[in-house]
Length: 224
Image 1 (cartoon, rainbow, N blue to C red):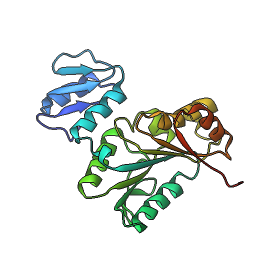
Image 2: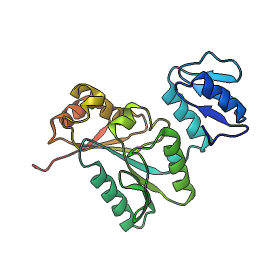
Image 3: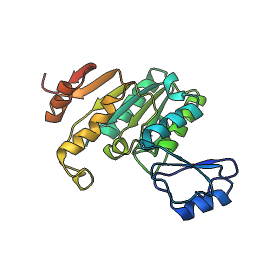
């Protein structure tokens, strides 16, 4: 909120009255939210599907940059970092300018900058994708965490390939049940832009995903 200025639109899922007052003082012309505060001193734009609407707005703001790139997103309990980084390295080896986004940081292969979250917030993620496109990158390999997927951080992006590594009994403090955890991972493959799903079917949850998905699947196994 400290970084907003005159003419800006400030976005927050649940803004407080005090925050809206502060945004107005900073010169914001409107506030976009999911839960509307009891404040009418500034224009309030409300949408019940906050994440999806925000993704659409960001995509339009950045001229749909992700649709002009090849983007691969990796999800799973283990292996996301390794798979995504190796994919970025492979594309760079093939002389395709590539960018990695994940636990190790963000940037061109071999020249990463630190970032706070494995899967950045929706606004930050769109900005990084658009910046990569403007800098000439043609390929992005990124990690899609279950938290990021559940919170809609990939909304509005055009993801071409989804990769599933595995699922173990972790992060249940957040997802509560293993079924909820898998459902969060499954959101990646339900994105309409994802044309190919690369699934590890040695994992039991991988076989469940294969049965559920109605799109091109590249099954992978270490057994055969």
